Image (cartoon, rainbow, N blue to C red; front, side):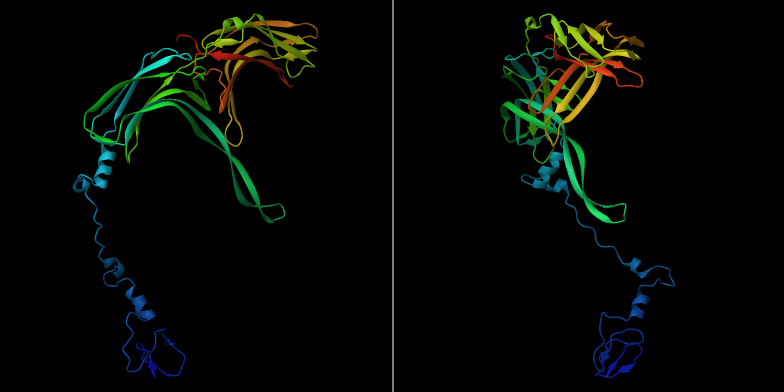
Amino acid sequence: MKTCPTCHQTYDAASPQRFCGNDGTALVSINAPPLSGNPSFAESAANFAPNAASGVNPAQQFSAPPPTPVADPSQASGKGSWLGNLVSGVTATPPQVSIQTDRPNGIYFPGETVRVQASVYAPDAVSVNQIYAGFLYEEECEEIEIVERRVRVRDSNGYYRTTLERRDVKHWRKYAEWLGQETIVHESKLPAGFQRTFQMQWQIPDAPEMTYRGTIVRAGYKFRVAVDRPQAKDANGETVLPITMIYDLTEDARREYQKCSEATSKAQISFWLPKLNYVQGETVAGRVLIEPRGSIKVRSVNLVFKRDEYTLGGHRRNHHTFDDQTIQLAGAMSFQAGIPATFDFQMPLPARWQPTISTAHSQTFASLDLRLDVPWGKDFAAAQPIYIYYPSQV
């Protein structure tokens, strides 16, 4: 025989039924010990019901587990303790790096020797893997990567289909070329108050790239001192060396530089410039000639100094253009066919670290753009490229 331990209803031993039909309690054989750990559904509900007398759930009366012991860093800071080394490396004041060149406010030219004095000071005791210094050329370019993913879309008929979605993601990438590197301090434990001053010199290549600081392109030669710390952020110091190219002014013979506009059926625009190579801060003095081939009515005649930056890496080329300076040559006027018009101008070039460069990863261009603002029609424009360098002194 089998019986229910709760309601004591009996069942035939040969019956396949294993649970009570009244409250679902597991049946037990007569003369068999009761099942432990298997209370009836009614008892389980009663055990987890709120206590009517106290109004507190018995499950909330259980004591909290003992706290997990946490290692005390002060007890683990002995010699050879990885936890002590980690804590001391993170909490210690990072070393300070200072760099000074022999020409802090000057320009360097190809083939010259750069003399640098650097100092490393550690206010607290700190472990280092090494301290090294070097001369490098580094480019930072904002490149475009195409990211693909599959998405489900619903068409106009109500059916779902899977399509490939592409989008552009911009990120910065660094290209570094070390021209020389030297280890100053090998792996050691620097004592508190450590200070080391050293002098080094490096030679600029014979055909270097010029320093550039733009929107999507940053390039230049740097002198860097790095303190490589284990399990902690490195302490670095660097200085950018402004380097320019030497060009021959005799190559700029006085001649006309002509550039036709896109709308050649309506007008031809030509530039006259005494030279093509300029330095930052210089004023470009020139003349522009407009030869209309029909009647043209414009709201204004503007001359724009424009810069273009290109990054060549990534999945496709990234381009950024911006108008740096704009001057108005004339207001509203009308041009007649066969009657040319000339405008003299003086365009000041801003003194920034933005010369004309061309490397394996980036390119920059500068140009003078003449723009005829045509109301309710296509504007006329013509561009004359120029080349920007650094001055010999700043």
